[in-house]
View 1: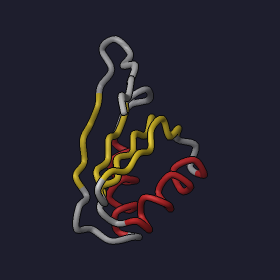
View 2: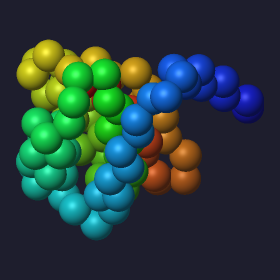
View 3: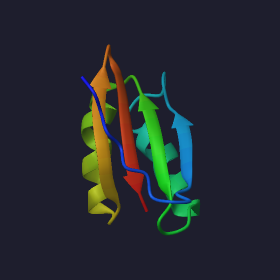
Length: 83
């Protein structure tokens, strides 16, 4: 399957590998990072916790962030959240 991801010119992407971190600590780490970011920047998360992959997008949207991608392959979850 081919995925097309359109990246804005000069988009700042911050990557955070949270494999091995269980919910709710993975959301706590992501939230701290999001709070430090500038508006328009994107946080890219890598998770291996299915509960976190389910709950983080909900929590992020409740805080006013925009989830722009959510995907999974082989037990690894990728989320992209824009501040």
